[in-house]
Length: 114
Image 1 (cartoon, rainbow, N blue to C red):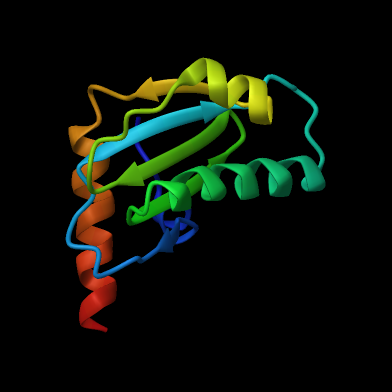
Image 2: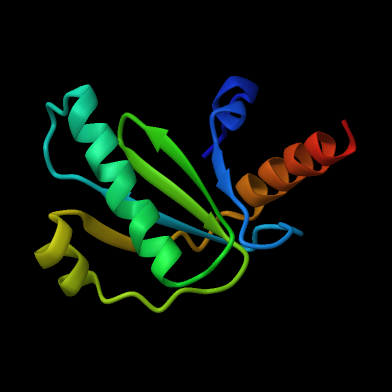
């Protein structure tokens, strides 16, 4: 997956401490092809609640196809429990995301120096 600069600029980063670099990317999908703005907001809020319960630094990127969540540490999430409690499908970690992580981390490093 290749992200354009404007997409990377839209990543919402939450810092519990200082974000050094993201090392993991997870995908969440809401199985509703016709999501309204409110549906995207509610899904985003549910994902941020999940991340904050794990006390990790994270970044969320909303795409038409779903949500990418970047974290510094690996997460052990129960996909069934997430689906039952939020209606969101946790698709798991994206294993071939090295290029994506490099691009996002480079952008974060540039933002820190501004």
